[in-house]
Structure formats: C-alpha cells, structure tokens
Image 1 (cartoon, helix red, strand yellow):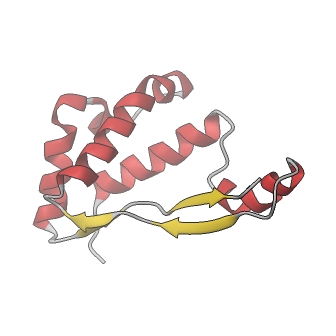
Image 2: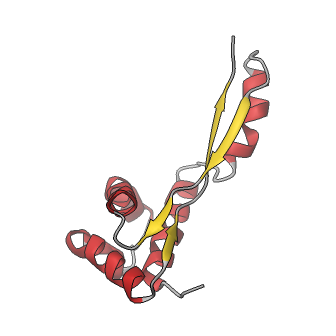
Image 3: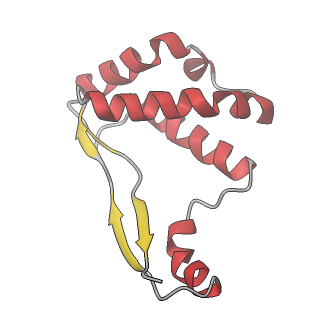
Length: 117
C-alpha cells in the first residue's frame, strides 16, 4: 500500500476532532444496542465504504468538504498541521499525492441501521 502522508494527516485529524467532541468512531457497532434500548425491533445493519481513484470527484469533494466543515472545531481543539490549514489548495494536493502513488482511496466504512416499528 502506498504511503500517503497528506491523506494520513487528514484521517488522523478527522479522528482527533471527532473524539475531541465526544463522538465514538466505533458507534456503528453499537447501533443494535441503541435501537433495542429505544424500544425498537432489532435493526438490520449494512456496512459500506466509498472507494475510488485519485481523480474521483465525489471522494475528493467528500473529504475536502467534510474537513472544511470541521476545520473550525479542529482549530479550537489545538494546532492543526500546516499542510491541512491551507483549505484552498487541499483538494489539488490530495489528488496529486494519490495520483503520484497510483493509489485507490478507501474512505472509512459507514454503518447504516434501520428497523420497522
């Protein structure tokens, strides 16, 4: 697997920021218990992770716009790495790094849960 330091920095800062506001990255695994505690039927669960090449506009947009939305919170929690502070060029730099490594970007898996009342 290719080394992608900028992508790693984004991933690490996402995790640090989410943890800093009390969000649990493993919450998806707890959805069954949450549904049952709420008096709902046991939920159906699905897991999915978007992935694609460096030029996939949806993946790049998802990552950059998510980072842009939590950036102020990350700044409040402490210093943000310089390479992530320049938001206007982040998309291009992420794309360039992944393209140079011919990498496939794999986003974190997301858990979906649903139940019938």
